[in-house]
Length: 414
Image 1 (spheres, helix red, strand yellow):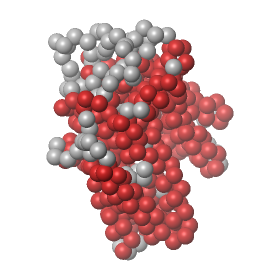
Image 2 (cartoon, one colour):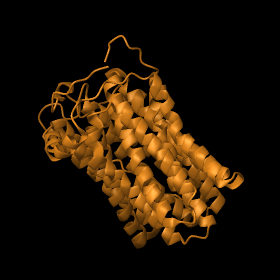
Image 3 (tube, one colour):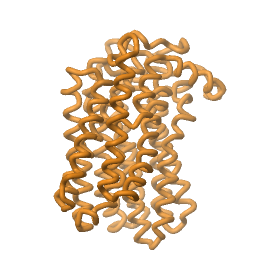
C-alpha cells in the first residue's frame, strides 16, 4: 500500500460497517413482523430467526478465503452484493417459507463475511492511534443500521409493491459499500482460495499458539460482559406492568440512544485504561447495575431504566471487544480477516449460554432470579479472569504490540 495514499475520516470508514447492521434490522426485526402479518405461527418465526442467527458462526469456517486470492475490498463488496440479492429474495417470498428461510440464513452469513473482510481490511489501513475510534464508529454503524432498517423496512413493505420494497431494502444494505471507493485497499495474496481451505486447520492452530489470541479468546468466551439480558428483557415487560407500546418504544430508544452514548464514551475512557482491564471493569460495574435492579419496584419506569442501562453497558462491551480484536490483529497481519472472523465469532458464545442461564434464573425466581443469575455469574467471572491475567507473566492487561508475527509471508500490494 502506498504511504502517500490519504485515508478518509475514521468515522466514515467506521460507517462502512452499516451493511451488517442493516441486515440485522431486516432479518431480526422486519421479517418477523411481516411473517406475523402473514399469520405464520410464532414457533415457526422463532425457528427461522434462530436458524438465521446461527449462521453468524459461518464466518469462522469460511474466514480464511478472505485473506487470499482477491483483495479484502473485493470480498467485502461481493458479499454485500450477495446480501442485497438474498434480502430481495427473502422479502419477495413471504409465503414460501422454505425459500425465505434459506435466503435469510445465507443473507446473515454473507453479511458476516462482508464485515469480516472489512474488519481485516480496516485493521491494515487504519492507524493504531485511531483504532479505538474506529471500533466505536463500527458499532455506531451497527446500531444505527439496525435502527434504520427496523424503522423503515416494515413501512416500505406496507406502502409499496413488494418487489419495489424488496429492491429498496436490498439497495439499502448495499449502499455502505460506496464508501469503499475512497478507502485504500492492500492487494491480495496470490494463493488460490482452495489452498486456504486446505490450510485452515494449520492456520487456526497457528493463531491459537499466539499469546494475544489466547488471552482475547479467554476474555470473549467467559461471561464477563455479555449482557445477554438485553435479548430477553423485551419479553418481560408484563412483569413490570409495561404496556406493549411502551415495550416497543423503550426497546427501540433503549437500543439506540444508550448505544450511541456507550460508543462515544469508549474512546475517551480507553485513553487511560488498558482495553482488557476496561473490559473486565465494564462487566463488573454493569453487573452491579444489574444487581441494583433487584431492589427496585416492578414498575414501568424500572423496565425502562433496565433497558437503558443494560444496552449502555452492552454497547460499551461491543466497542471494547472490537478494540481488543484490532489490537490483537496488529499491523500487516496476513491473516487479518481470518483473525477478525475467528475472534468476533467467539464473542457470540457467552451470549448464547447466558441467555439459557438467565432463562433458568427466571424460571426459578422470576425477574429477580434472572437478574441475580446474570450478575451472579458475570461479576465472579470478571474477578476470576482479572486475577488470572494479573498473575500471568508479562503485560497481560496491556497488549504487546510486538507480539503480532506473520503466520505466512504474504505479499501486500496497492
